[in-house]
Structure formats: C-alpha cells, structure tokens
Length: 640
Image 1 (cartoon, rainbow, N blue to C red):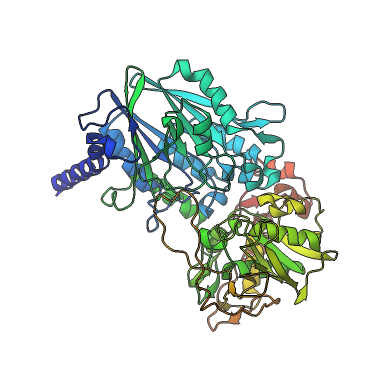
Image 2: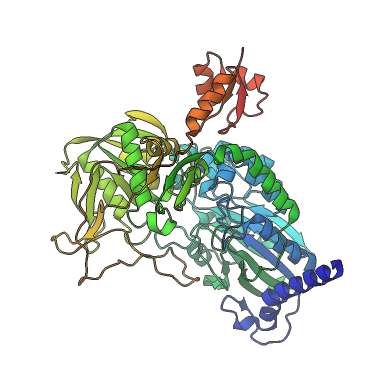
C-alpha cells in the first residue's frame, strides 16, 4: 500500500509539472503570454528559472471551494522545488489583512505562515497599511525575507523599505524592484499613512532599474498596481514608460491573466487573481546573461486536485485557528436569507447586507443618515447561523463609527463621488440608510445623482444633517474628501459591534432583510427606474478590470421603483434562542475582577483609564513587547 501511495504521488507530481510546464516549453510561441526571440518548437536553451507568485490573497489561508488555501499552495510549491531547484517565490501584496485569521492578531498569524512558505520577497499592497504604517514596519521586522517598495517614503525623503533586492539563481542574477500603488493614500484609512508619501511608481522604477541594470541579468518588477481603468498608476503605464523590465508581477486589481500579457517594451505581465484561487507560474530561460524566452500560466484547484497540502503549513494554520475558536464561534443570530456582500455586488449597487449595516450605524448613532463605502464590506453571510466570526469576516478592518454634521451640498457631492463609476464596481460605492437617491448613468460624472430624499423630504443643500459613517470615509478615504473638513461630532464604537448589537436588539432573531430600493438607476426626466441591485454575469477569466454588472431588466420590463423606507430594516423574531456573546463575556469578567478580556476597538490606554491605572503598568504587568498589539479575546491581568 505504501509503495502504491509513493507511486501515485510521483505520478501526480509528473502530471502537474509536465501539464503546466512541459507543453508550453515545447511550443512557447503558441502561448498568448509568451515573449521571446523564437517561434519554433525546438527545445529552449539556457538556464530554466521558474518564478512562482501570489497576489491579493487577503489572508484567505483556508481552502474554500476554488480557493486553495496556503497549505495546498505550499504543496504545489513543494513539488516545483523538488523538480527544479531554480525557483523564486514572490508575493505581490494585500496579504496580511482581510479575514479574521489575520485581523484578530493584527497580521502576525499571516507572517508566521508566509515565513514557513519561504517566500523570497514581497511588496506591501494598500491593505498592508490597514494596521497603520508603523505597525507594518514592525511586522516587516518579523518577516524573514525582503519587503520591497521603491516608492514609499517618509516626509524627509527616506524610504520606508528597501527599493529592490538582487537574488542569484544558478548563477543568474535577478533584480526585483518593489512598487506600491499611490492609491494607498486613500485606499486605507488616511490616518494609517500620515507621515509617509507614495511617489510616482514609474519614476522610481526607472531610477531603481538604472541603478541595477549593469548588475543583473533579469529585471522583475513586483508591483501592487493593477490594471483598473479607474487607476492612474497601473502596471501597463509603468511598462510603457520604463523599458528594460523583463517580468512584471502584478496585483491590486485582482486580474486573472491565464497566460500572462505582453505589454509595451516586450514586458511580460503576470497576475494570479485573488484569494489563493491561483498560483502564478512564470518560466524564463536565460542564456549568456539575456532572457531568451519567457511565458506565464496559472495553476488552479482543478489542476492541483491531487496535490496533497503541505502538512506542516496545515498544522500551523490549524493551531492558530484553534486559538481563535472561542471568539469566532459565538453565535449572534440566525438568518433566513443570504446577506449579500460579494465584492462585485456591494461595489456596484445596493445590497441587503449594505442596508442592514447602515441601518445599524444609524440606529446606534441616532443620525439622520448613514453612509459607508461598499469596499469596506468584504464578504457575504450565508443563510443559517450567524457567528461573530462571520461578522468580523464581513467587516475585518476594525473601523469605528463616527458622526459628522454635514451640509446637504456636501452630502450630495459625496453621493456623486460614490456613483461616479456606476455601473462599474468601485470601492467607494455608497451603501446608505435614511436616504434614497437615483443615478442617471447617461449624465456626466458629477451630475448623475438626483431625486435625493432624506426622511422622505427632498435634500436641502443648505441644511445641516447628522451623518454616521466609518472613520475611513470620514477623513477622506475612497475620495470622500468633502468629509475631511468636518470635526467628529461623536464616536459610537466599531462597525462589527454595532451590527451585532443591532441584530440582537430584537432578541434572538431570524433576519429577513431585502434590499428595498434606496438606490435606483433612473433618468433624470423621471422615466424608467430600476433598483441598483443587479445580477452579475460570468466574465472571461482574462478580463483585466473588475466585472461590470448588467441591469436585470430592459426598458420593456423595468420594475417600478420600490418604496423608500427611511426606517431601519425590520428584524423578525425567531422561535429559537441564540446565544448573546457580549453578555457572556461580561459574566466571565465579573467572575474574576482582576482579569480583563479585550474587546474589538480597545486600546491599552482606554483599558487603563477604565480601571484606574496606566498603560505602562498594564504593559509591564502583562509583559507586552508592544503595547499597540492587543487583540479581541486576549486576557489581560489588571493591578489588584
């Protein structure tokens, strides 16, 4: 039996490697992502080097449907390393944040995993900054391989990270230049990047390339830039403006390039989608200090179906999950419907989860209206039991709810900003409560929003309204710059806590929430209206930009506008009883008055003030290496 297992493993490895590498190597010219000097089917000469790459994994470490997870990725990587020692493993960012696995411990769990995978380099994406740039610097010290970015600088001009690294593989010197999207300035909370700046990626790439060109045989750009049409700085722009880049490993736009893309100046661009759905593979052949052939492809879960996950990585992930189980398994409610939070839905229309969340924000704050950016909603919730872990996965950023006293004209400008890209998905698309509006897609950007109602009355541009939002948009995130001038009128805790409280407000509940037509697509002349909640068609895997959504109805069968409901969505009580985790936590604390269990949004300073001590005393008593690193569920000893 053991002999058969070994033989089966050998055959699986051979099938994977020859299926993914052999056929392309035999005829690289037939590959749409192939760049080189020859078009014949003769074997390629030179030293064969393989670059394996990941991007936009967003802490999706566990296998789930088409998401392979990090243990399976490690199993594939193991097989490549066994077959060819000339391997580089690179990560293109948006890695240490995105699911509870990461956010409960501020990314430290992901660092442990990627260290075990033995990456050779990574570039920070915009979401690496969600814990603040100073925390990212601390995490980078724990990462056991270079973190690269040539275009992140402090205000005095010094770089936050090294701009490039040079790796030698079988005598071939490979220069790797890191580039981070300047959109980070507003695609994380602006306060997370205070004191640093993001300079022109193309200019910094050129400067770095000029510095290393004579020292290396191959130049690889590791750029978290993407190919979104709405982005100014893209991988396409960089390769056009900077000749001499052999390979560009891309990220940020979650683009799936099955066979790569040959850009300007012959640069091969590779991108592996998102969420561990793919492992990217770039093969190149170098002879006489020159790249003579290069090609890209992807491996997905179907191709790797028979690959065994790496046992060590699987065990590490399981141990971390075990530590987090008590927090994440707390039951919050039951829902009889799916709560829609898919990326392509919340960024391009109203959803029932968007309605529920903004209703919760308005309920806890007592505001006239609530607005949150669709990009802050990171997952859906399936019908059935809703746990605290589900809520945190939907809202992993730990954002706080704040209120602002906003003029009606600025509120209208905010809706124009959020609807500017509609129906194309945008992270700034507004999910709202207490307000309804319509979008005329035929009108010019900045003049598309009309029929704005607040509490059933037309918006008054000169009136002042109390608006609840998150602390990301409140300071100008996702280009809601019109809010940045307003001081905070109040703070009301974190989004996840507010949503849990709102769900529990009616006791044990069965959610029956439907998007109710607060946002509609309609001509300004009052003709056809349809709710801006749309079906998403399947798109080709190679589509570079985010998927566009197609309206459900045509002009002959358009639905009438649904009535606007300014009251929060109703929660229908269920017969079964769900546990109330917050009360249980309070009981547990009461049992031992000298122990405090950290809650979401806590800081050591806040805890010290509540308990009549200082944060320094708490740090010393609990032997905390870094006072900024506390996480929900952590137990802290308090002074007697």
